[in-house]
Length: 354
Image (cartoon, rainbow, N blue to C red):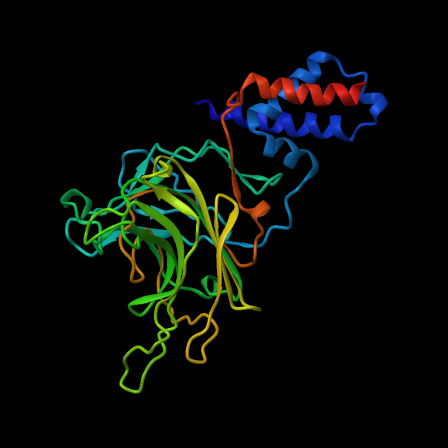
């Protein structure tokens, strides 16, 4: 994989396609077949979504990025300090929890793609995506898919991590389907202020689930007079969005997952592969807002959930409500589309030329 070449193609496409599509028709007619084939090839190679998105700017306004973990390191090594590519320098710490042979995450050459952009038509935010983080749940080896242990990345709380509105997103690839596996969240007491995790089905006892859908968990943890936890604990919102399924084979690939919280409506929304798959409104014993208490921000395990087993890449936390066109996108390798699709697009150009 030649990442530099991919980036050059990406930038060349933006220039050529923008000029061609904004030029007067009379000018367009003077374009040679060589030029049309060149631009068409770039369009097809980068994917049709990027063809039109980059050409006419479909991406909306981007919110402020609070943190962005690109998970870049040396493949095969154990992670330690996980760098924040954002402006705030919120470096995470890789480690493990729960005992039972839990291991610290390692850098892996398995990635979602070579180039990442900030939405359709957005800026390139990672032009050289070479590694992700691999998380292991130690229970898998013994056939226990309910183990509350694993590797994770943590970050001490700050006011930046407690905004009224937010969007959290990541790319995930499931290896083993763990019941209620934590992807990313914000801890509170023994639970979570908020947590994006998985909702399993088709399992019995400690066996592996047959389907994992995305879920949001919100723990108000209203304190009773005795100091115990009230009925506000563990409110959850399910979805129809599978991130791993034995029936469909989705566990063999990457998925973009996202969760937004709208403070004006107290509403959670869940997205899988840029489609909204679930939503819900908070309500618990008079507490309708998120409740923070300075708990850790975490990736891969914790917050009352179980250890994730698989790969996580490109985790971004924004202090605003992003729409799907603004979510992180992958620029695919050139030449992935078939020649038939290229011929179809060239036909569209020819009709405009005529």
